[in-house]
Amino acid sequence: MARSAIVSIKLVGDAESARRALDETATAADKFQRGINVAAGYASVGLAAIGAASADWISSASEAEQAAGALEAVFKDQASAMQANAEAAADAVGLASSEYSQMAAVIASQLKNLGVDQADLGAETDELIRLGADLAAQFGGSTADAVAALSSLLRGERDPIERYGVSIKQAGIDAKVAELGLSGLSGEAKTAAERQAVLALLAEQTSDAQGAFAREAGTAAGAQQRANAEYENAKAALGAAFLPIVAEASRWMQSFATWAKEHPALIQAIVIGLGVVGHDVVDTGVEA
Image 1 (cartoon, one colour):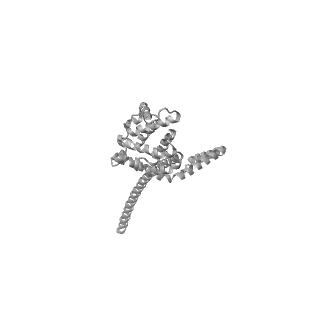
Image 2 (cartoon, rainbow, N blue to C red):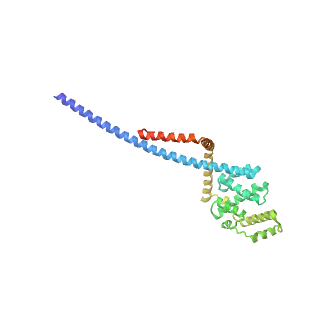
Image 3 (cartoon, rainbow, N blue to C red):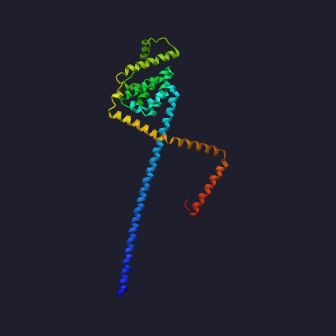
């Protein structure tokens, strides 16, 4: 009888130990699963963030690539010198390389239409962009906004530039044309004379602002503008590695679209077949 009691006690004790072990195992497994779920959540968020970032990088790289192409088309033999200006633009004028290139292409096209010689195009364009940086430093806002105002002035729209302390009226232009000894001209010669007068008045009225961007380099606004430009340059550099992949994928998609257009019946059969398979999977309860 005593031996039976001992055996019973031992069996009960072993069962209790087993139960506790199973409980502890279940708790550990539950904690492990929760850890896996949390890790999966972080991984999902991380992958989504990487995906969004890479899309942003690719967009920046694509813009930089297009802007470089615009420099080549507009400046021709001077394109390499303007590309060097673009690469130094973050520190020099607070613009990303792509921003400088885009603005330079627009400004140069306007100057060319106003009669500026191709040989002078690079220097005059860079001078106007640097003036935009100075105006922004003196009166606030971004270099991009100030350069846009200068571009408007070249189109004959004089209101935007007034924000920067510049007031150019037609009477003033006519007086400056006469002062320069260019009165009585017509056609393209008159246009060139008025452009020369406008730029002369612009230089006179912005004399106090010239050099302001360099003088304000140590301010928070100046540092922030340079940092933003460098960040955009960094995104473009990172995205450049993805551009060949994107280009190849685009070519493949174009080829597939052409093939699909030429074989509509086969595409329809494939779609119907996939629909039938998907229906069977749902009906049988088999996970896809």
